[in-house]
Image 1 (cartoon, one colour):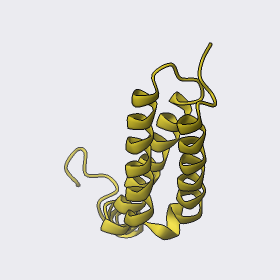
Image 2 (cartoon, helix red, strand yellow):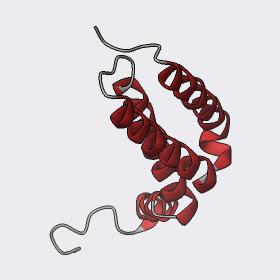
Image 3 (cartoon, one colour):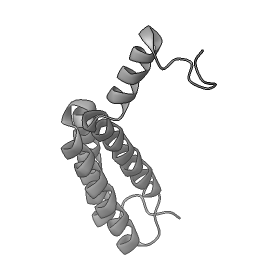
Image 4 (spheres, helix red, strand yellow):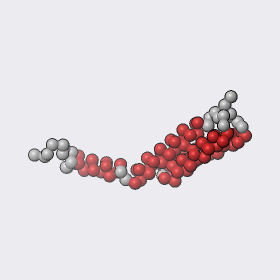
Length: 106
């Protein structure tokens, strides 16, 4: 008899489980996951600059957002490339707005 807790470690179920763990922990999957996280952080940072009071703080936040978007695009262009590129363009447009004084909270 198999020891307690060893169910699913042999045969077809075990092979599927090992394959799932191998794919999940692959560098490619980890890069895609990290790239998605970077894009999500960049989106949150961009949203923080929707309305701003301090131009310098808004510019610093946009710099951080750009770094995260670029990192996401570098980590896995296939997973987030087009989304990251669109985000980079949105950050550039927001930077122009902030530089021109548009979007200041009242």
